[in-house]
Length: 241
Image 1: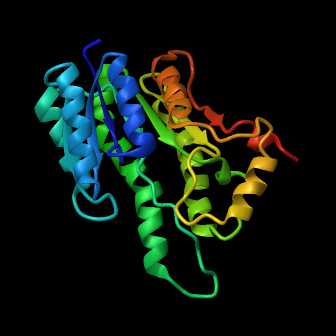
Image 2: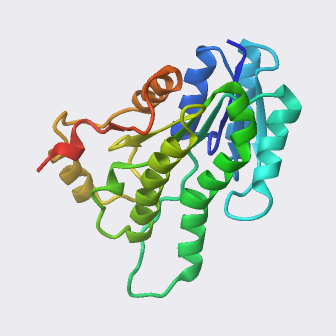
């Protein structure tokens, strides 16, 4: 296909599976990571072993510094084009409303909402030239908040709004969509009672997989008549009353 994609937070978990799936579909992959260097390095090595010069790794902190120039510049210098931007990197942590914590607010909002906006704007010239697409990884908790995660939920709700606004503003040249995972991977330290409650409220009665999310991303990446949509991959969790 000779197409390129930049995926933030692609060193491990869902981001890494998205990278593998898109690579199998012919994309060259720019793997962004912040701290998961070993995982990102191993992923890039495995992709390049399948097809030479089809993957690179780029380290930077999306919460601070000149990350836009570094990421977009690396893709431009290496391949000279960008067809797809996937804003996957995210900070998921609880909010303690009894403590005023502006640093936590800034860290979560910067990574989960500001970075996708800034990267989308920075990628516009190459995406317009390629008539490409943007895919944002949101969350079903954007619309049905999770107790104890106020700032995280606010950041994802903002990302849903940003997805729809950019889809309107960037049409017809660039498509913009979102994928909202539901119960896919348990967070470290999740309460077993919380896990049981989530399963009881998920119509399909089981966890999804990272591949389920990656399959939805691959569909949207090539669905030329789909824009402004949020695809929920949640086993029906979002329709449970």
